Image (cartoon, rainbow, N blue to C red; front, side, top):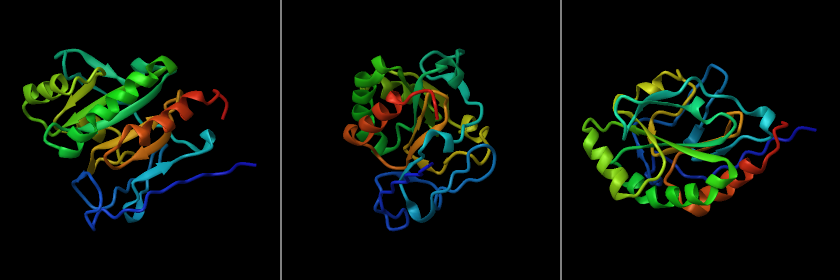
Length: 200
């Protein structure tokens, strides 16, 4: 018997209770293989069992630190991928950077990769300085126009920064966080997804 577990952290975007740089109303998207709905400002959404998860569309872009090199979600076939949408202008992004790096270091031996998506930073050098100063060890797509996200149509929450999405080994969406994270928030989720069998 299939069970769906949906866990929500009750906080309202409109009430300003989130540590995020929201740029729109509730993050709501429909269509494609993954229908994303976050009514009422819910900030933590989990999709279980794996058979109920949808996939994202094609995601690729210019490597922030290596101009002219393309990086793609497809580069991480068979691995759990943690996507993090960030900007150096975003205070919650600065606050969570060391927590994300901690989880990356603690889980990369489990077949987990992290991929940042840098948005709305028109000066590439400032975004690069952020990576260096925060000692971020994983790559990021440089996407000031958010084109890489928009290429996914309406299947991805593009109105909240930071956003973190945990993809399972088939790159299906296992969890979405629309808020600043601590390592203690993210690591148990990443470890659980990494431990899943390929069945589902």
